[in-house]
Length: 367
Image (cartoon, rainbow, N blue to C red; front, side, top):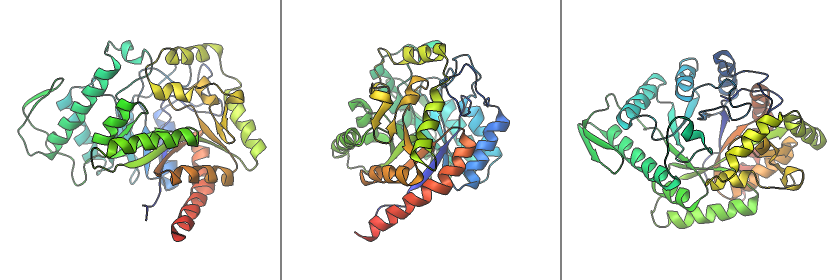
């Protein structure tokens, strides 16, 4: 028997609205608005909220307002009670010992509701904005050291000494450490290096949605790496949803998302992809007629959005059927989003998640 499916939602730190890729968001990422998104997701029964990380706006113009990740997550933890926070972290920008203390403090403030999504790679030229210049391989090697050393600090009681290539600790302490279950580590990526790192360190391997044949190959590649480690992380799927009562209305809503995009924003997104070493980013932006990668899989958002640029489009039944196919590949956790994030959160919770649960329970009952 597989575990119960987990449904998570998303905090739109770039801003929000029914249109993406304009110079400015219809709904700026103010704390009041992001609180509304977080509380809606909590009220709708979602398990966790992914708080992404960026150094420039990745959905509207690069100079548009952007909510900083860690401050936002900490503030939202104080105005919610149950929902967890999956906070994206880029190793290398905060010292290791300080980060371990920050994470332990947020874990304590939130009552143990913190998990971490480590992002070793990065959007093209994004690291460089803040003076970080390192190659793709170095970032992955550094990230692994960062994770290993964090775990060592949290397991305490200290003092802790750690000597690595990138990080050094001399009789360091982290007190109080996270209580109970330490933050779970999420890792993504589709390159061989990323899959190998997940096999060694991830509690959850997180994948951006791709067509099923490609996704199956990614899972098989991950399994080959896992065979060397004797580990079994959960698998998670990250996707946008465009759900309406009819298929034609869903496709109209998908096109409306990008039909008013500004050419300047499109050019900024293209610059983030050209020449990138990130295999996943290139896969999200692949060329397809009308952006249709499959009957219900659409990557039009890749024109205006960095990172995950694909969405499932259709009726609640069609989208639930599509997600069921990914569950059959091993995905037990679903990180969903939709524009605008308040209204689509309610729609996903009321119309999609119950259908998918029913399909999963029926499949397990027949086995």
